[in-house]
Image (cartoon, rainbow, N blue to C red):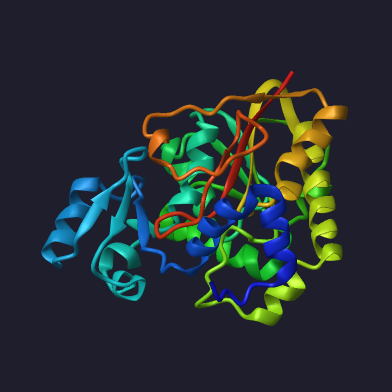
Length: 303
């Protein structure tokens, strides 16, 4: 299979998953991913959106684990963007995998919720939609340009969110939250699309020093999250990576020194997910394919 992938990445995948599973991952990298979106129930009812799709002869499929999520069959993302339902913020184009962390977090109305690395805002606005704008949501983003994009999406989606322009590692310890989503910065090894990725960029991205730098940031962010989480409360750690060094190993290291336990993830429709083996049985790791990006999700409770 001609992949144009850096040798170092193939080696890491084979060491972790073995040759057969790696072959499936490489096939996933070569597929064209389908366009997916979720209905923004802060602005629209699902029936209204489906009516629009049918009127425009857009074929769609439902998703077993999320009634607001849809897979588009016969039009491109660009064509969807031309529809008024997109322009008015009634739908949000989002990968299925990235819809999972907010659902697994199970955000509750009335809770103080922190999204630690929030831009561009897909998960933040999803949390606002799940809680019917009745939670105290703080979204953190250190990059000014990305923070502007985040604010734009929040406004367009009609979400009520306080945006904090700050590196989440430096949030004041006086803050405390009932629920936290840490969708950590990562190498993106689950989201590679070979028809779009440049070989040289991939080579640089998976250099040993770069992965070490990424995992150091992830550990610092996770420690911070646990410090800000109220005792007895839960958080979700997720990445769009399928490398153990950015996922299981980060959690296992923090578990040694912090007072946290893993919470098993269960929900209706979970059995339909294309899962990769993981050394943490409570966590989920998605195989990249035409519907899903490679994604890792773990739920943690502070003792």
